[in-house]
Every structure is written in structure tokens, then in C-alpha cells.
Length: 149
Image (tube, rainbow, N blue to C red; front, side, top):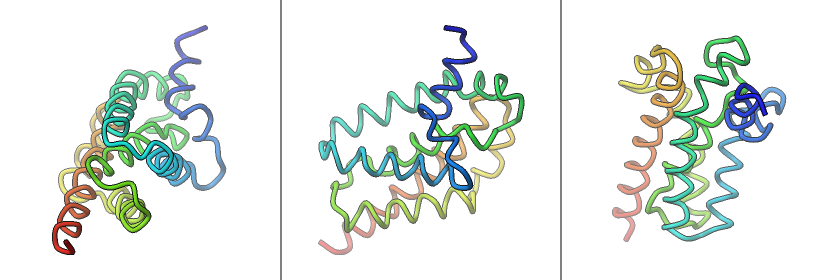
């Protein structure tokens, strides 16, 4: 298997990135389903770490294979970001749904330093803005969780 094909396979999260009009949202939703399916903090942590590492390893190669900077079909960053957003958050709809909405908002708005980070080249530029969005999302979820307990 050529490395470009493998990079595209990972970068598009096995083709989710080819869903028309909403590839990033679809990848984030796929992560939501994974969180709800596994419902185990250690499993979510493992999947978040593996998908993040795979994203850093493959996103730049996928970008080269697709011949476009941060191509919309590359969604491993959204998948990993959503998984990171849910770290140590209970896998309950009352947290997962707001987590999904918050992550998508943060990913679109790109609060500091996400906007600057996305201009980096290769995998770093693709992954780091979503990791920043995940950090903000997770912090807000933790604050809300602590406030209502």
C-alpha cells in the first residue's frame, strides 16, 4: 500500500472526510458515537491519544496526497479533537451533546492561539488548532460539571 493512500485513509478517518458539506462535523459526530459506545475513561483516553498521534503522523502526508493545504477531507483533527474534548468527562448525553456543540463552536471560532496555530505547515497546522479547541471545550465542560455538582 502506498503511503499516500494510507495517509489519506487515516487523514479522512476511513472516508468520513468525504461526506459532503459537513466532513468536520461528521468526524466530530463519529467521535461522539465512539465516546458513547465505549463509555470508559481509559478507553476514551487511549483512543484520544492514538487518534492524535495518528493525526500528527498522517495529516501532513494526507495534505500532500490531496494536494491542498488543510484539505476539508482531512478530518482526523476533528475526530481527535472531539475525543480530547471528552477526556475525563462522563459519557452521558448531558455532557456529550454540549461537548459536541462547544467543540464545533471552538473549532469554527478558533480562539487564541488556535487561529495562529492553524497557519503552521503540515500536520502541526492541521492538528494544533483542533487540540486548542479541545482544550477550551474540555475546560468549559469541567467547569460546568463542577458547578452543577
